Image (cartoon, rainbow, N blue to C red; front, side):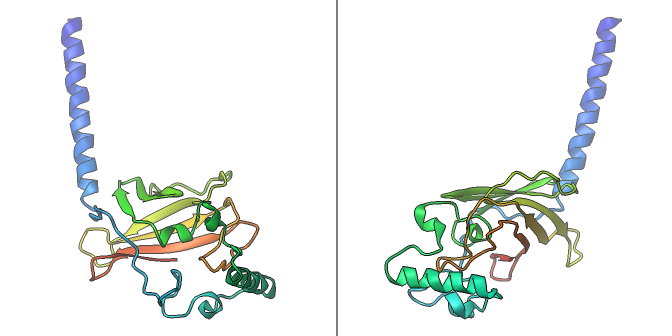
Length: 210
């Protein structure tokens, strides 16, 4: 009798596992296939670093909405670099670029699961986790260069499969960080908020806007 009970219990457990596995497989079918390495391609002028708005020149030409205090930081950074210094560019010391710069120069791979999307990068910024399980924002975020990211998937073309990932990333961040190699500054309190949209363009590239 004991043996029979154990057998029935095992059979029931196996049936539950099959049912749950089937549900996960159906859920997985909603998510896009972004397998393989993706390399950021940002048009730029010869001799210029990657820029967040490739239609504009780098540095002051980006027309970032800086206060006079931070405009001075940028100008002093570029002047120092013109004289052989590093300026306001901590990545020149082999420190992590952090958000958002970490998304502009490393080859990227996307591992998509229903609860978390992993963005594998490399160098000093090895990876990001984007939580897509509906969790609320934690009240005690541990400072890091990549921040804490929560995302939501959307089926914008109505075909039953997700095609857009919207992500918000918050600090506190470790710092200091800069937007780009000119030393375009982020706020020195390291409490930035970034919003991104990830989707495939017709050129089969993952496009991210920050």
